[in-house]
Image 1 (cartoon, rainbow, N blue to C red):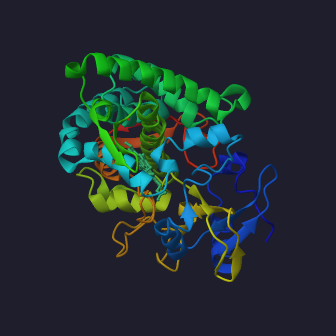
Image 2 (image 1 turned 30 degrees about the horizontal axis):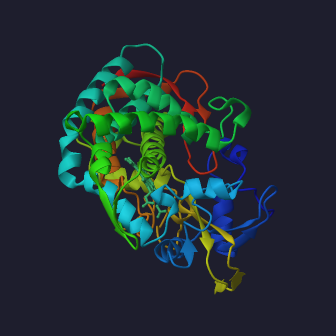
Length: 405
Ligand code: HEM
């Protein structure tokens, strides 16, 4: 089969190329792809291989070249990327991640449930007013609220920060980022915002709570001894957590609406009741929003008969692994009663496993539950438009008209 250019964001305007991934899984599970404007890359498409590579951080590094598909254009850009813990390897990654994971305890997450429920009720009330609504901003507000609350971002700053985060997350889409300007320029806005908030937190510590307030107090113990985090180090936490939190969960909500519009009876068995956790898990396996993350090989080695060289780019295809028929019988079917629900939508269990997984699960359970309980019919009311992006599968616009149950 002819190679598809898997790093071309245009490819995904029609959705995930599922047939191509199936062919790769069956015929070339570790497949080299030339890249028009880059060094080329291996793609891992089988479930077991993605899990194995995810866990072997010593062989498949996030730090060497970062975790984005695009190459850094300079050494400075690479250094800036490595300030985000998603672009670090253990033991540095372990130290920095621990500072943030303290905010994601089950207790903290549970405390956010009433806030999410309140917003969700309000937004679904609006949705059911008989008018046409674009569902994407609805989903973004629901997703952003929980991340911003966790971070300790004052509510008055939310609209501006959603705008900045959207440009960073959706930088490959010309409608969001006209002229497709390079990422470092966009990161300046978020850095400026973060520096302002950090300065306020440092001058008025008693009036701030959440991740940023914790980071301002945190100490790191490393080879050089014990030190407080610098402002630049704290800024490094913003992009990954805001982008990770905003777009992924929002895309999952819009994709749920899309699935409902496409197959109006698909969720009938779950209507009018609480949304069970297995529904959310199976939905993320079936239509998870994160298609891929990048690694870089640290040593020459052989994998399924292929010679991977030190420095080679390796893409872990979660979108393909979650549809691997070796692991999930009838993978194209949405079936929350299936025995195996150990999907890789949040990663394959390595050190970078999604830090927001529990939060996202709770958020989606509440939002899906509210939609299933209250919506009678939902139909597209205009042309939905997929996001132009090569790492996240999502939507830019989804105009809908919904009626109550
Ligand atoms: C449905 C929602 C979500 C999905 C499907 C998702 C998926 C993922 C995946 C696949 C990874 C990479 C795993 C790996 O490389 O091994 C990841 C990492 C990450 N996610 Fe999520 N995510 C979601 C929601 C969130 C939320 C709500 C937040 C923040 C509040 C978040 C923050 C992060 C961060 C910071 C990382 C990097 C972790 C690290 O490098 O240690 N994600 N996520």
